[in-house]
Length: 159
Image 1 (tube, rainbow, N blue to C red):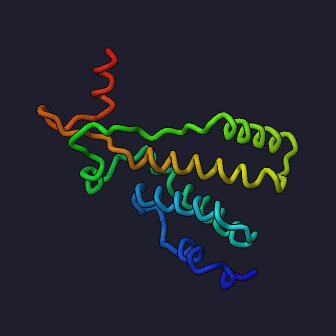
Image 2: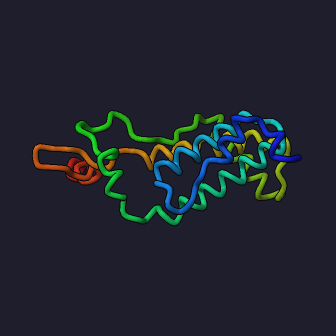
């Protein structure tokens, strides 16, 4: 099936330019959008194209994870007040059981059954969303003593 048969909205996600110079926050957003679109597609060619693009974007993102944050992004990751919530991955017991059961079956059977695919697509979406939220979360806070790492203040609180 050709790319021309893929719905326009999906095609737009597939054609956004992404490479190793794309900011990690932008890449995280693209990954989240692709995982979301994957949740809502039933057509195999669209799903395959979205999965390939998601894998490509994650592949571009991974080598940048240990890089210094570019100066132009520092302001967007700095806040005046401590965030009320931190990103969390907290599936309920039913979802967690479904995810782990599907993964165990996948590893045992080495095949992806039709019933496992939506469960694992949901897991993929939850993980990508959590990962994207972590990458876009504030890292610094403005204090009376200047800008500090939020983690640094959390460690001081714990001690």
